[in-house]
Length: 265
Ligand code: G1P
Image 1 (spheres, rainbow, N blue to C red):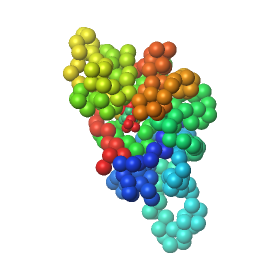
Image 2 (image 1 turned 90 degrees about the vertical axis):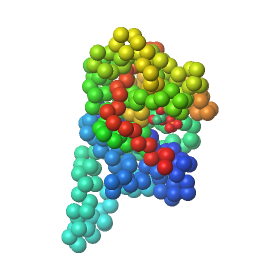
Image 3 (image 1 turned 30 degrees about the vertical axis):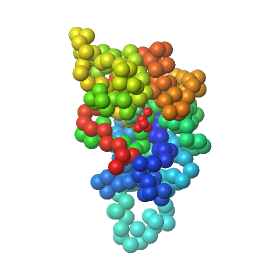
């Protein structure tokens, strides 16, 4: 998979006042910004073209991923180039496209802004404010996409009481422990939470929430243009994915560890 589309345009309201000055995606975890880890995760599954969706006020993200030849020359002259070695190793072989989201109209709208970057190709989508502790689901997702041709979404089991905060899906688990989906709802009312079933058709107790990683066929872009605003009056990626599900089918892969969303303190 050559292209990774990374939305990083959100306001970061839950991180105010810090996010007035520092995009939440640049908050450090283990000494590197969250977005550095996210780009490394995309690179690990072969993505070399990185499209990052930004909004006004988030220019520091672009600065982080831009080469500063004066800084490098100064570091060379002072025997300190090694401090940039991990950054330089990440940047090796990557090209960046900066995509503007002029208005904050939801995650679906941010993805729609990446249509010309995708240019008819499938894309990995990684939410720029979320890291995966305990391993990335993207490797198995790309493998399943290649095998089936279906779009894929990462899912995380959550209690039914928490499910109302997420995009949630229903479907059936297959013999490999992955899922064939048949329903998707963004932030469902508790009585609308779709049911996930095991290989024998028995209902699973947990709900399955979307977990910040996707492999999407280009069909999603047409769907994003066609759908009306959804939950919260925003263009919801989940609503467009539901259209893709009807047209082509959709698979899901459970994340191996935990989803850590820096948007929440
Ligand atoms: C977004 C998605 C939702 C997903 C969640 C976590 O919601 O719309 O489907 O479950 O991220 O990845 P948000 O956190 O922006 O409300």
